Image 1: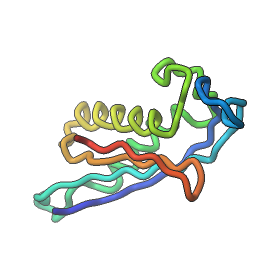
Image 2: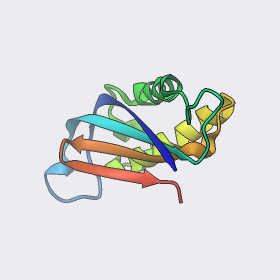
Image 3: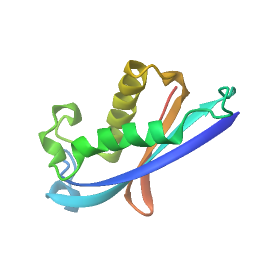
Length: 125
C-alpha cells in the first residue's frame, strides 16, 4: 500500500457554541491541514497521484476558510470544531478530485491541527 501526504495552512476565527470554557469565546487558530491519499497501484509515471494536484486542490479548499469566522459557515452548525473542519475539507476534496477526473477513492484522511499538539482526523470508512 502506498501513501502520500500534502499539507497547507490557513488562519481563521471561531467559537464553540455548545462548549463551556474558554473556547466558547471568539478566538483564532493558525490551522495546519494534512491530506493523505492511499492506494495499492501507481500510475504509468510511478506515482499514486501528483503531489501538485493534491496540494493545489487542498489550497483551494483551505483558501475558502482562510481569514474567516468559521461560525458563519452553515456546514459547521455553529460549532466549527477541528473534527467538523476535517470532514468539510475531506468532502470538498472528494468533490474537486471527482470533478477534475482524478481517482477520489485515493483520498484517505484529513488531519486538522489547531495547535502543534492538538489534531483531529477524518478518515474514509
